[in-house]
Length: 236
View 1 (cartoon, rainbow, N blue to C red):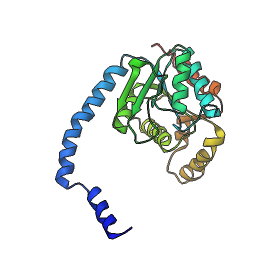
View 2 (tube, rainbow, N blue to C red):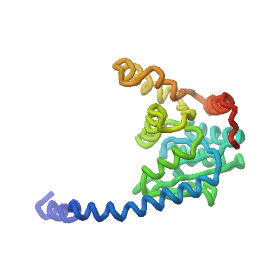
View 3 (cartoon, rainbow, N blue to C red):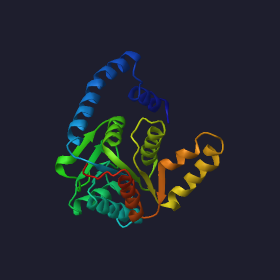
């Protein structure tokens, strides 16, 4: 890279001044408020849903894709709607399962520079688009009656640990969190036990916040048992 190239990059990627940052933040407040209001208004009409998370890079034919589709189909038949991040991969599979089961198929889509476009299996009146991850995450937390987490990347981990933290600290009403695939999540769980638990970073009770299973049927059973225990139904 020569001197001209360096100078060009400096001009293109010149950082914002503090005053520019403050001005941008002030206007962003209105956009954030609009996303929250729209999310609250739309999702409050939909009813109880289970959120399904997993990699956007999961391909049709992959075992995780098929599991997500089966899971959503079974949950829909139990009376739950399905809510996903609205994109491809495991999200598409879950919306697809809900769609073919004749249930509610919700998508909270977010604008990203790659890999994220709303999938074709979301109900047209239940697609909500977001620019901010944190407002979208707020909607998942507020309007989900359970989380099912399939193998995924950083975004999937973000959603998982946010929910665990909020339940752990009593900032979120307790609901079932289910991880599917012992093969995928087992190493992480062992690390949590071997390091975090043994070193006193978490308590033994914290491990009861989530469940580890291998199949869609097992995941549905965990959620179904949770609501039967408290004598609640999906259509409460």
